[in-house]
Length: 98
Image (cartoon, rainbow, N blue to C red; front, side, top):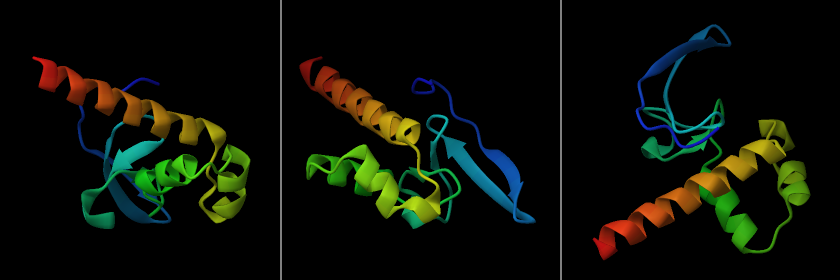
């Protein structure tokens, strides 16, 4: 999935409780009231930035998945975090160059 052009609040029921979030992709969301509104992996309190920092520290996808297995993190979700970060970097550079 690519970065969404338009984001609308989605409300689902998880564990019998309402779960509201703004999707940034299929796996990365911003859920009001969760982690101060920072992007997390859907249905978790695991911040995307934490995983990006681990990748920067040369952790493999397999090591990250093993470390966060209780969050049911997948390689596809990690790849989406990297794609979203790359897209944000391109947008920032384009805004500076404009």
